[in-house]
Length: 164
Image (tube, rainbow, N blue to C red):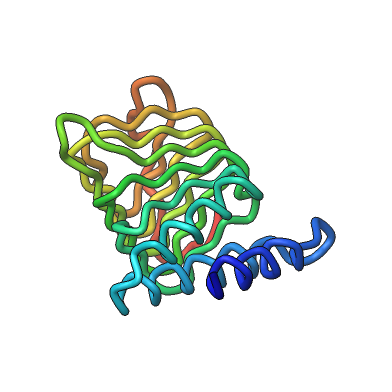
């Protein structure tokens, strides 16, 4: 009962005018800490709150590095066994999921723009940019910019460039 009362208070404390990014990050870390302590019910509740409030589904089993950013978290879905590196930025309506029970691995310093779908047993290299509405079904080498349906390499980028 104490957890349920705390979660209701936490849910009501969210304001749409506050920093959504900070709230999502805080809820994700609380979910992971609860899972590590063996409190799977609390982890599921945090997952439910993220889904209900922000329409954002990050599975408790996903491994996400530091510096993870969701500037617009609406509609983001991250599968159960996905591995995401450090400093990854994911925009709205992105799906990162399985194909035949195999999940993708995303490298460090990757930007995934709105509506992209990353599916299956693939690896997205470091310093990559995935364009809006791209459907990625094959692995991508480091320092690439991809887009299209199905996604293909548009150009290679200089690793020193921060953005295009």
